[in-house]
Length: 467
Ligand SMILES: [Zn+2]
Image (spheres, rainbow, N blue to C red):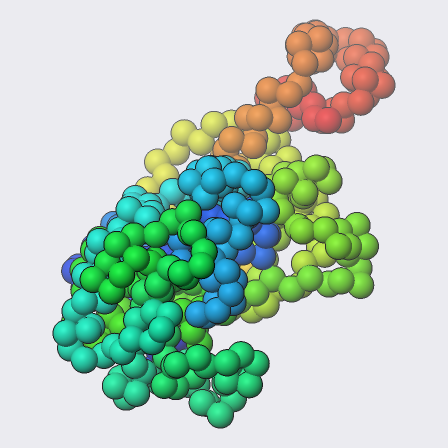
C-alpha cells in the first residue's frame, strides 16, 4: 500500500494527488546535465529537488524507476537552434576531444551528486548512444507530416500541433527570437530543429549519417527519444528546472505527442532558480560557483544541501555565504545533539513510526508537495520534545533522514571517530574517577580535556566529549 502524495503539476498549475499509471510504481524522467563544463551550484539545486522527490515517493511506498540522461551532443549555446554546440565549444576551450570532456565532466557531475547525497538514477542513458532512436523518432514525425527541411536541418512545424502553446502558456508576440536573430528558413519562431546538418565548411567532432545527410540530433529530441525508450510512450513524472518550461519541455511534449498521438507525461514538475545575491557575495564575485568552491571555502557539501532544504523547491532562493554559514551551524548543531544521545536506537522503529505524532507531522509536510522547510522545522521540534526518550527521538530523526538525506547517522559516527586515542583514554580515566567518587581527580581531568580543546559534559552513561 502506498501513501497519498500530492504534487504541483505544471500541466494544470495545480497541486494534485499523485496517481501512477501502475499501482505502486513510478516512471520518472529528469533532464540531465550537458557535460561540457562544471555544474554551477544553481544547476545542482534542480537535481537536489528531484532527489527529494525520489526519496519522498520511496517513503510513501512507491518503487521508483528513475531515468536521467546525459547530454553529450546537440545542446547549442543558445538553448535554441543557434550558436555552437556546447560540447564542441567545450572541446575547443580545453583543447581536448569531445569524448574526453564528456567523460571528464560526467565524472565530476556524479561526484558532485555523490557529495550532495543525491541517489543515483537507475538508468543513465547517454545521448550519443541513442542517435538511432532519435533518427527513428524524427522519421515517424516526418511520416506524419510534422516536419519540413531547411538548408540547415529538419524542423518541427509547430503550426501543425495546435496545442503547442498550452503548456508554457506562451504568448507568441512576446517571443523575442525573431527580433534578435534571423529566423533563417524557419516558418515560425516556435519551430525547432529535430536534426541539424553538419555545416559544409566545418568538420564536427561528432556527426552521424542519417536519411537527411550527415549531421547531429537536436537537444529536445534526445530527451523524448530516451524517455520513451526506457519509460514508454506515456509515463508518470518528468522534471527539470523552470527554465525548461517555455522551450525544452514544450518541444518535448509537441514532438512526443505528435509522434505517438498519446499523452506524453502525466505530471510535470519544475524547480525554481537559485539567485545570487551579488551585493553580499563579495567572496565569490566574478567566480563561477561550484561545489568545489564551497568546499574550498570550508563548507561541507551537505551544508549546501541543508540550505536548499530550508526553502520550498518552487520558491526562488537567494544564495549568500551568510545563509550557507547559518545552514552549516544548523546542521552541525543537529548532528551534535544526536551525537550526545549515545544510545543506539534499539527500539522497534516501525512501532514508533506507526504511532508517533512527529512521524505523522513529518510525512504530512513532505507528502504535501515536498515541503522540506516544514519537515526540517518538525525535525528540530522533535529534538526539543522532552516527553520522548533520547533514543526514541534519535530513531525517529534517523528515519526522517531517509528523505532529507543529510547523512545524520554517518555524521554522528564520523565525529565520534575524530576524537583521538589520547582523549578517549582521558575520558575513560575520568569515568573511573567518577565511579570511585574521586571528584577532585574527575575535575582535574575535565580541565585537562578542556585545555586540549574539548567540551566535556556529564551524562548518565558517562563523560561525553566533543570538539
Ligand atoms: Zn531534457
